[in-house]
Length: 240
Image 1 (spheres, rainbow, N blue to C red):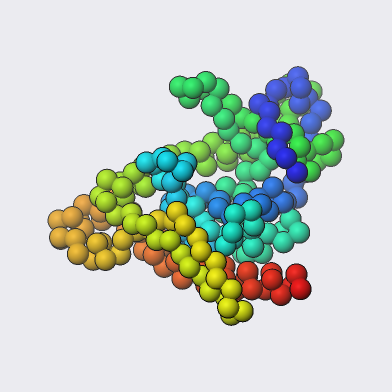
Image 2: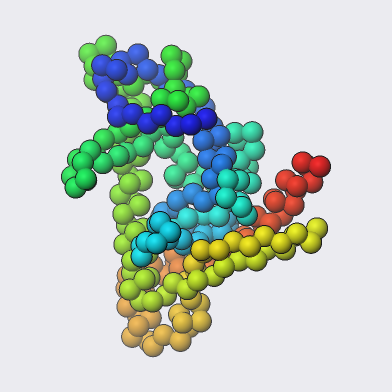
């Protein structure tokens, strides 16, 4: 289903309601999903955390989880359901999002995916009879706003890694039990060898930034690539 993102409007969405039930079908075709530094530890227990360029030629990097071995697949979403205990924050905000009202980004707009199966005439109302936001919408708006703030903090963390030249290219080659190979390019990770060779002063600077838990969570999460591979193997078996 294609998205139909629209800014929330108390006149247009006066009768609009949102179901509380969770669905993840909107990311079924995404093999990369953003992840924020605040959730690195729980995410690392079930998903690999990697870094990719914001766009193909961009010098900026973003923090993501790898959920598939090929573009267009998500091995963690089955029939719209999430298959793991921890749900990444990026998936919890749906069908709400926040967009910039102008190029400068000084004003932000709360938006909703009007095409979502959660949006319709059943569920929680967004506005009351007076046109004021309901508690449900206030809570969801606050939650979405917090996520955007966390995204900026994460962007600062990634910029710090870049400035310290700690990101290194790490193209993956995953071989399944069946013998099939999957090559994944454009992936970056923290350079563990360079981290180990840092002077005491350099390491202390990183410690003072408070990012060591996130760094180690990322490095530990790379073991989960084999988990993704196992899910791919099960997916292929189920398809045959």
